[in-house]
Image 1 (cartoon, one colour):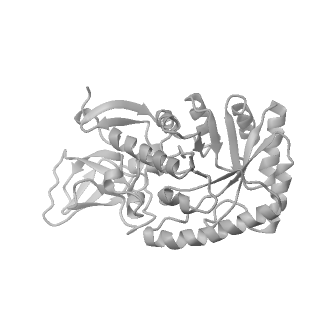
Image 2 (cartoon, one colour):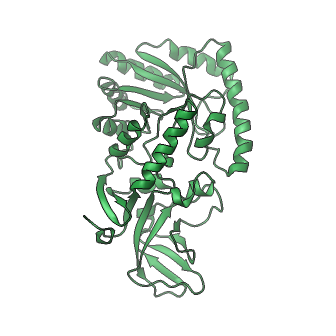
Image 3 (spheres, rainbow, N blue to C red):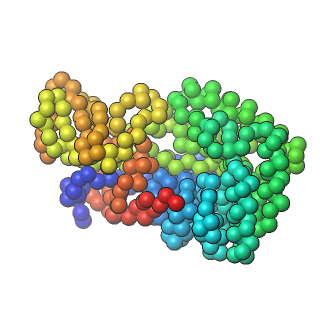
Length: 364
C-alpha cells in the first residue's frame, strides 16, 4: 500500500474517515428535520464523492455549470439541478440533451433564459425543470421580493416543456459566527415570509423551496418554509467554516501536503504550495487574515502567498527545516480543489485511492 511519505508535494489529501463522518452527519441532520439534501458538488467536483452523497440519501445533486452536470451525469448521477443562470445557444441545447438521459432542472431569474430553455426543450422533445430564484439579501442573483416578480413567474409558468419545480434562494450573506447568524436568520425569515405571502396571493405554487449554505447548514430547519438545502463545503470543511463556528479543525477532511523548501530569511520559511495550489482566497469570517491553517504548528502562520511559494512567518523559538512536510487547511476549499488534477484519499498515513477531479476546469 502506498504511504503518504511517497506522495510528491504539493498534493491535496482527503481523510477518508472525516469525509465519511461529514457526509453521514449532514445526511442524518436532514433526515431528522425532513429536509431534502441536494449537495452542491462544485466543492469536490468528484463523481465518486457525489455517489457517496447519493448513497447516504441525497435524492440528487447541485452543480454550477452545464459542463459539471455533464461530468456528473457521465458518472452515474441521474438527478441534477444547475443553480446558475445559463446563457448561450449551445448551453441551452446541451441542457436539452441532458434532459434526454437524466432529470435536470435549472435555477434562473429572468424570462429571457426561461424562454430560451423552453425553446430548446421543445426542439428536443424533452422537459426541463425550472426553479425561479429570488434574492433574499445576498445581492448576487435573484428576483426582488416585489409584485413585479409575480408577473415574471406567471410568464414562466405558461412556457411549454418546462416543469415548474418551485423556487430557489441563496443565503450566502449568512457567513458570520453563531451570534451573528442568530440575527441574520431572523431577518432572513422576515424576507422569506414576505416572499411566500406574495406568491401565495398570486396562486403560484412552491413545491420545492431550495436554499441553504454550509455555515448555516445545521440551522436550516429554522429557515421558514425551506424543503431542500444545497450545502457544498461541508464535505471537507475549511478555515472559513471553522472561523464561522460551523465546524472545528477536526472536521476538516482536506489538507494540502506541502514541503519546506527554504529557510534562508530570518523568522520565515517558504513552502512549495502557493496560490496555484491553495488559491489566494481570503477569509470571509473570523479574523479575515492569512491564507490557511498549518496543522499542529501553532508556532507558525501562513502569512502570504505568491504563485509558487507559501510564506510562513515563524514565531519566536519556532523551528523549520528544509524538507519538513506540513499540512495546511485552506481558507476556501472549493477553488483549491479546482486547481487539482487529482486528490489522494488517505487513512492516517496510508493512501487508499487516487481520485481524478473529473469536473476540474468545467466552467461553461
